[in-house]
Image (cartoon, rainbow, N blue to C red; front, side):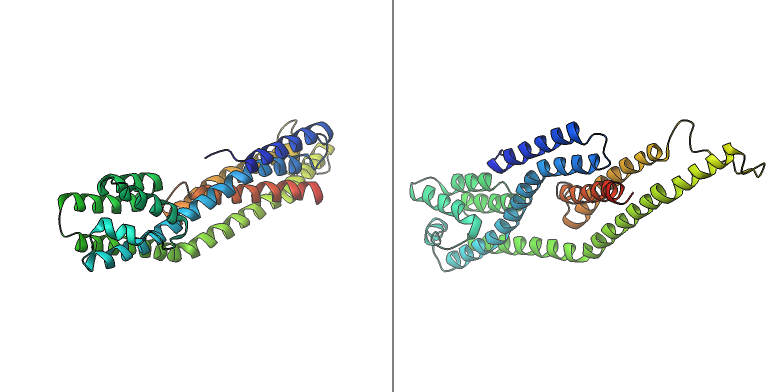
Length: 283
């Protein structure tokens, strides 16, 4: 990922926020909330860039399907594949258009179709498109029935795209359930932190003061540890839980661990902001 201006701005804002919070808010309840906001501000531009890139990759796959169908129609009509590529140069293929124009220009300059297609696939750097283009270039080089091969490639790309959409639709309910379960987990952690642990502290104080007599309620929350210190691991638990739940959701929904990074980021931000925000403004 190339570092862009928006990334630099985000990093600067994050560093300034962290420095200000360390200097002026270190002993305040709002410290961890502001610290988290600073880290999120620095990471958000990178996440947005990754999401934009991911959407462009999906658009390229959809546009490549349109490109291959147009190529099939032209080749089926008896036009050589090199001439067909030149003929469809002016059509709008969205984010794929610059690559199609480059492919057409290379063929116009006399570069062999096989070499031009390999450069085309390497520039796009998409697994589905690379596999399809490899089949097309090998078929063109071997001199087979390029029309039927192109048609089968178009059908394969279409089927792959259809299966991805079907899987995403089928898993959508599980993704929503994953978010809901994680929210419930956060609520349980907050109840533990703000209700259960303070009650245990109260029982311990009553026990030390002799108010409980010999009733046997010897509930100790840890020698020398306050309820707040014991509650701190809950936040770490939420962060770890959010990270791995996000990766799992991404793998199930889109078939990629990389796609789960955005879900992990969202869940970790939710956990951090809700936990520290509740402690700062309510607790």
